[in-house]
Amino acid sequence: MSFHLSPITKGKGNKAQARAIFASLMGEFGIAIFLFFVVVGLLVIQANLSNPVWLNEKLLLFALILFLLYTVYWVVKLFRAFRRPNETEKGGPLI
Image (cartoon, rainbow, N blue to C red):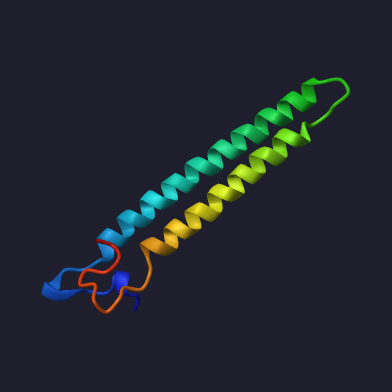
C-alpha cells in the first residue's frame, strides 16, 4: 500500500489529506484545460468567421506551448506532493 494511503502512528491515516491534495491539484489542472479549450475555441470561431477561413497557427502554437509548460509544472508539483518520504521525515511529504 502507498505511504499516502496507509495509516500512520496514533491511528490517524493520510487518506483524507491525500485526497484533499489530489482534488486540489486536479482542480487546478481542470481549470488549465478549460482555459486552453476556451482559447482554442475562440481561435476556431475567429478562423471560421474570416474569409478565407484561416486559423492563426502562431497563437494556437503559443497557447499549446503554454499549456504544455504548465502541464510539466503540474506533474512536477504532483510528484513532489506524493513523493516517497525520507526515513527522517515523521509525517511524510504531505505535511
